[in-house]
Length: 392
Image (cartoon, rainbow, N blue to C red; front, side, top):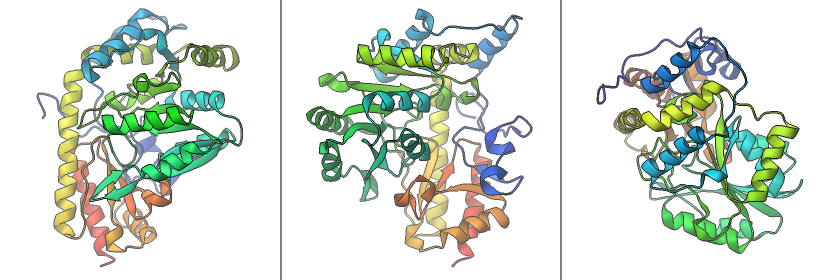
């Protein structure tokens, strides 16, 4: 229990058509594995959200809905005011069916086929697929690990932003999978470089609320209108099945072109009413639950650190600034990572994401989802320790 919210009691998700549990075999080739994979959580959706959804389902008509109304947009404005001390213009708010959809449509607007999109690596694997699917070039700027902390390689980043063929910086803030929260100085420096080289910024901030340090939304910082924040309540409040995301698009012509694509071209402007109501309820009434969640997840990270470093003193686990994703560096152990993953699956019935899914700079890492009860974390970490010991 954390402030009267129960995160300890396991909930059986099998048989609910959930990707993480019911379809783990699609990626790992074996049914019934204990999964620490896709980034949703095993926790119950907060009660204020569930109550609103149940109340809506008492009404027997589920017709088409709208998102472009003050109730939806003012809930977002309220969240940014109370959570981030950030004032937003609700005229900038647009809806989209998913974060990746909105990001993709902005890249389509802000670049031409063959031009480059710059992003930090390791990176969420959907970035590569989406950028290449748009016929654009993936321009990777690897983060560097200094004194156990991931930092931006400013020389490399500026060189890539200065290349006139690269027109977009796709920022992941907080960063997935490293969990890095960018501070104000770093955001200002990126904004200045992008303004100097006329590079537009798309900031994917879907992990913004599960943060143990202060998250600062990328709102241009007075330098340019060529920016967009793209996010959703889905990760924070465990409601991805409800569908829906939103963006703040500062530039009015860009916003209008996006809305034309959404409605007239792609026919996707009518949202799930459950997604709209879920977001409104989460932002208006979900903060106490979220604060308790963050405490619990941070304690999960600390457990991973203590368990791994106790078993292998040469391993140094970096507790991230944000996210319920543990980015575990095992490179110091010089393991055969293919054999490690095979052992986890075949001998211990555990599924953990291999770091190389997130690019070459993820080799030697694992990504372990900690959005789950401590008892499950203990099972996963115990299996990982035993699997590593098979190679020792």
